[in-house]
Image (cartoon, rainbow, N blue to C red; front, side, top):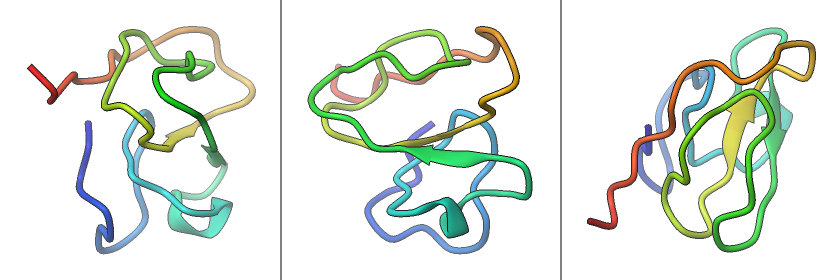
Length: 69
């Protein structure tokens, strides 16, 4: 899910837009991407150029939400 450019509070799994690991909940990391690069542990394409929090220890799980429709 895309919470916007400057979301408040720690972001959950497969949620963005993060700028660094500090923006994500404990145990998650911020995946910096270009365009629609696949986010490890997340399904879907999400929003173009949006960075998402992911868990580097998990396989594909929750879908990203495409808000560019």
